[in-house]
Image 1 (cartoon, rainbow, N blue to C red):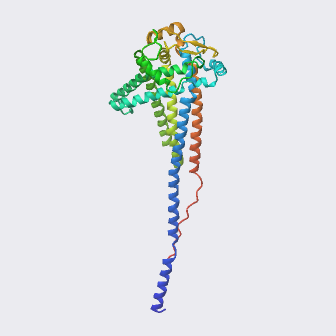
Image 2: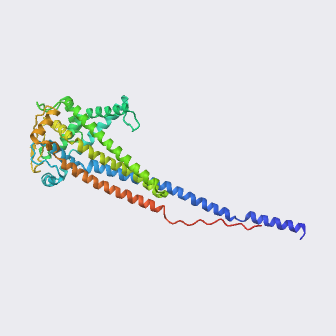
Image 3: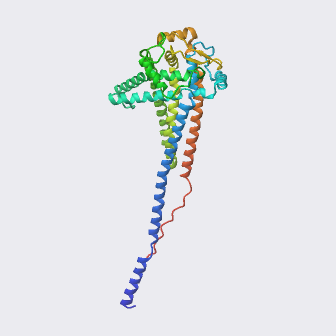
Length: 393
């Protein structure tokens, strides 16, 4: 072959190789897209799981703690202030016939009376807490690493907030225990008006048995701080224990990425719900006697008529003559026995049985979502093709 023919043949081959698509380039383009797609899917999966967990946790907490539990709160408070009751309702079984009679005589809506005032009084407490923290150095939030001084300042902030909210908490109690057949249904902001009137002394029946607000603020603050402290300690203990167990379990196993993300969602949301449930149960159990005393002092001298918790068929007036916390506690123990401090505790049991059922349902939903997202990570994938070998030239 001549030199000219050899040069032409070489140029022809080089031109063919230049225009021919390379198989290894196509392979890397395919694999690049295959690696990019799981990254995008992982981000979308995390967002969906976070939203689902947030929705389940929020709806379960709000529904269980504020809506479904309100009839139990109404029954509980009516039993607490009924000083002449024959039935103490220490278990939920004795409450069923009362609930049926109330439904027959007044309708089921009577068990949700005062729910608006409960939200309003809690809102006043939160606004007071925020306002005080803004104008004072008292911290609204603390952590386990905060010094003791900061924790004490935080408790002082809680106490001051409860003191400010005391007249509105008393007005809210009145709306939740007052019988519907004895008075008109209160308006939306009647709780606010009655709270201001309790402070100023306007539009309120002045009787010798009505305790002034300054005698109620300290017991209210002590009750609120005690309940808050027990709740936070229980929550911290539950969360710390569960996290420690999860860390040990994670160290002994090597879950794949899908199960890790699903487990993280389960830990973040359900653990917080379980801790709050445990803290609320312990706080209500331990502060129940003091709550009974405070509620009776709130209601004294207000000429309130409540449903008869012995039968649920009629109404009775409340008339007491306590001089303060110590006198009220002593009279209850002497006249009603020590169990008189726990009147209506069966409603608390019923409340948290219902709460536990909702918690169980939320746990099932969390596990279902975790399983679905975890199994989606294990779906069979196509094996990537090997890089074709180029023939040796």
